[in-house]
Image 1: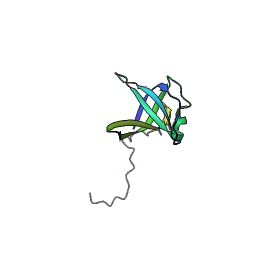
Image 2: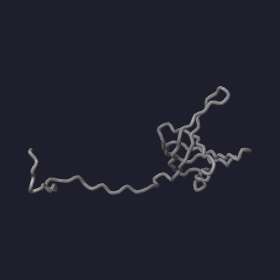
Image 3: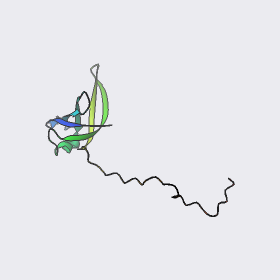
Image 4: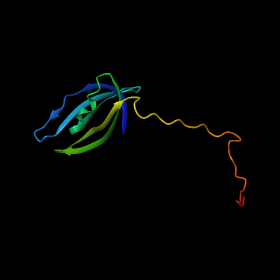
Length: 113
């Protein structure tokens, strides 16, 4: 899934005794009723937001993850790609549709219709 918004908060990396690391950040969506959406980056993905600052427009690609812990259910948005909004590969130009007389019909047509 993808979501576009402005960077609202960039957290510090948190390390755990097991060697696991995570980093949290929040973006504000650009809708009629903006939402503040928290994301998590795990392990080596934590450096994906080093190039951004609060206020930057970004596109976040993420997975939704859910789990149960002590009888309660939790949902996390695990980001795996963060790019500046408007960045990416430029689309190849689309050729205009053919106009009248642009079709080259074969001279020797052996079709029965």
